[in-house]
Image 1 (cartoon, rainbow, N blue to C red):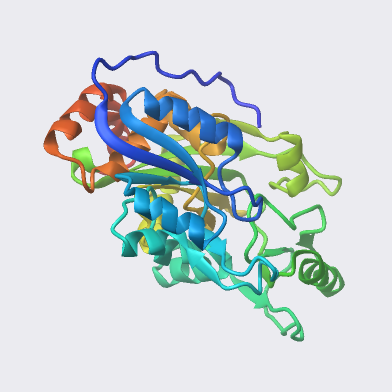
Image 2: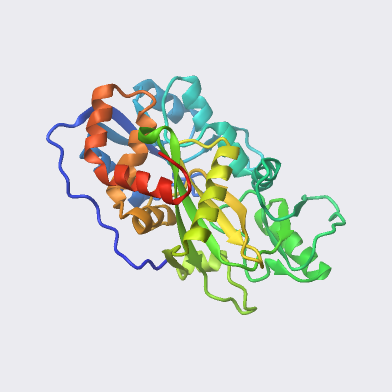
Length: 371
């Protein structure tokens, strides 16, 4: 991903650290992990400048999870969603435990959304239907389930086909846009076989693509701050532009600011509506695409986006509000910590983030919201 800027971390130092204990939690299993090792270390370094105790814990099984809870951290920065209870079984077949549920049951605070919201996000068609039921725009679709005949449909070609439960554009390639029943069947079979997943089939949106960071802002009346960027993928051999797995691996997409005020307002409004409809908390990223008439529609949500210094989330923060990576991490942690922290700590965090406070008020106004 190419950005028109270099992300810089804040150089502020803190004379006295906040007396809180934070655990950064991730997995070595690439199917379970949402936080790369380099991001874990960067977050660790960032938080140790502000908080009294910060550690990294790798959780692979229930025993690891119990040990984490026994430490009684004030906050867990989640970089994974669940664990497999039976490692001898496949990912799909093994019983699972959601970390968010387990931590909540044991009175441990954590960053991000609850299991209910993460479960919706995890299954793309459930998220889509929830958004549609809330009266928000998303392409018409159907689900082609594994080991079942492909159902008859009334959708208009071209269609877009992707797995229902994969992230990072897994299973998405130049054959994902289909123009006939023959192509549709071939792509569905490919997803069933290669991804061991049901296929989500939706009407293809040919317009521009955007990703919107959404952040809770407790300091201005529990409003939501939306920060969009446009993502432009290179054209594939068929002339289509979308984020395929190959594009993400090659890091060949371009990320830029959304400069049209009216369009930005519509995208932000949709993203905030989706964030609310899914029952999201703290922060997340909502993907949006325009149809042939330029109307924004919801594509999918990422409620545990990667907290890297070069990802879409950090680009959203910097491009819109010049919030550096370090301040993004501190802001997310401060918002999550707000559920338990005392007044003195809250005042301390507010004093260290004037840029976020100013940007929040400015963007809420430009998005049609009011602080």
